[in-house]
Image (tube, rainbow, N blue to C red; front, side, top):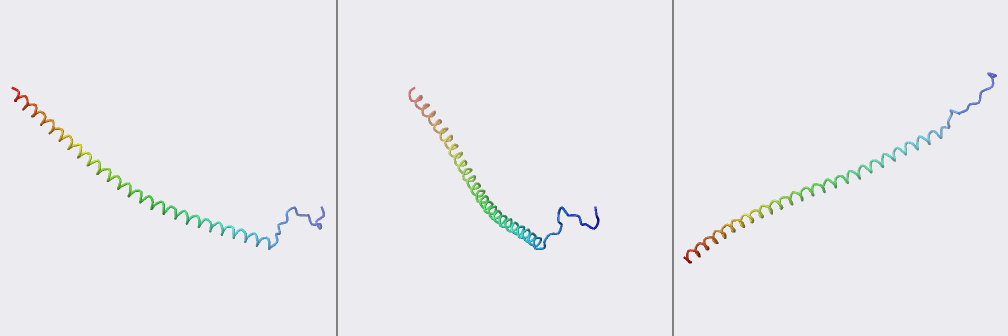
Length: 107
């Protein structure tokens, strides 16, 4: 090979300046758009999470109120059952006294 004859290059490493600038601009704009989209999505997600936390707090308060109502109802039910058992004992005692009086009056 003759050294005075330049060898043809397979890949030309010289790129036009306009192509480099436009490619860099597109990349920067794409990254900026991605950052803005991510930011918007993060804000929307945070807003939804805040609403969910508020709903959760409301649910917790409602559950506490319902548990208190159920406990109060159970207390009242237990008191009514106790009164029923007491009344039944009184009725049974009066029935026994009545039977004793009837037996005594028959003799």
